[in-house]
Image 1 (tube, rainbow, N blue to C red):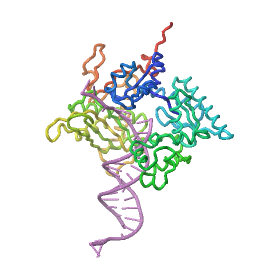
Image 2: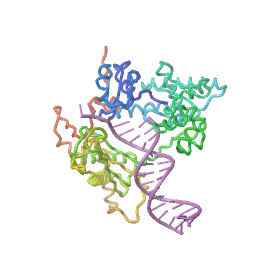
Image 3: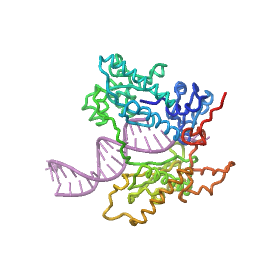
Length: 448
DNA sequence: TCTGGGGTCCTAGGACCC
DNA sequence: TCTGGGGTCCTAGGACCC
C-alpha cells in the first residue's frame, strides 16, 4: 500500500478548496518541492526541485504551496495504518506513507486469483479513503520487490486516469510490464546502479531478473542479487513487524540564514541535542556516543567546509549531559575561517547520537569514561527529566529549556507578543494548521 | 538570495591476534 | 625476485531507501 502524493493528500483532507487544485509541499526551510499532486506532476515539476527555481511558474499556474506540517502527516499516517490493520494483523509499516501487507491467496486459476485480489485491493482502497480521506494504491505480488513493481504499474494506470489497484500475480500482462519497467524504477536500484546496470545490458526489470547471479555478486553486492531474486519471485525480504531498536538518532536543520556566529550555532546545536534527548527518552533509550557537526552551504561561492567531532558518554538520555557534550563537540568542530582568512558561512548544524540501547541494558566500562553519578543523583536527574518532559508536553515545546538553547524570554517580541524566532530557526512560511492534534487549530465548519 | 532530513546495510582496507 | 594461513574488529565511504 502506497499513499498517493501523501503530504498533498493530507493538506486536502481538511481544506476542501484544494480539491482538484494543484498542490505542492516543501521540505524543511521551504527549500525543495518534496510532494506534488498529480496536477503538479503533469506540469513537469520534478521531485526534489529547489522551490526558488519554480516559484514564479507555480504561482502562475495557481499551485497552492505549503510548508511541511509533519505533525499533521504523522497523525494521518497513524490513521491510515490503523485502518489497514482492520484487514490483516500482518502489516509492516515501512514508511510514513507505505506499508506491506500479507494476506492469504484465494484458491482458483491464476486469472481468478488475480481478479479476486484486485477486488480486495479496491476494497482496502475504498475503506482507507472513507475512513481517513487519503487516496491510496494497493498492489499485490508474491515478493516485496514485485509488489513495489506492481505499485509502479498502478501509478502509471492512475496517471492515465485508471484504477490504481493491481495484482501482478496471475495478471496476463505481467511479463509485458516487467519488460517495460525501467531498471531505475526497481525498488533497491538507485541512480548509480541504474546506470551501471544499463551499461551491462540490464535496462529493465525483466532484464535485471535474468542477469547471472555471479555477475551481480561480483560487480555489485549481495543486496542487488537479492533484488534480482525477488524479481524472479523468490522472497528474500521477509515482512518485518517487530519494531527494531534504532542505531542512530540525528537531529539537524538548515538555518533560516547562513551565519558565522558561533553563539547562535551553539544555541542551535544545544536545541538539537535537547530534542534528540527528548526523543531518546520517549523511546526508552540511552546513547553512548554523541557528535556535533556544522556545514557551510553546498552550492554557490565562498569557502566550503563540513566538520564534526564526537565524544563517548556514559550511556544516557539526560538533556543536560547531552547538551553539554554536544557543545564540547561543537567547540572542537567549529572553525571560523579558512587558511586564507575567509570566514565560513555556516548553513546547517546538527547532532547525532550513536551506540543506542534500551535503557537499563547499557554495558558499564571497566574504566569509567566520566565520573559516575551516585544512584541518588541519577534518580534526581531522572525525576528532573520527567518533569521537563511533562511541562513541555502540557504547555508547549519551548516552555522549559536549558539556558544553552537560548532563553525564549530574551527574544524580541513580535506584534502579537509571542517570541520572535531566533535567526537560526528554519523558514516555514506556508504552514497549514495542525488540524488533528491541537485544539486551537481545529478546522471550523461554517453553515451554508 | 534561495537547493531537506533521517535512516540502513555492505564492502574494502587497515590494524591487530595466533 | 622470492616472505603463510586463518582469523576478528573497526572505520570510512558508498550504495540504497523514504
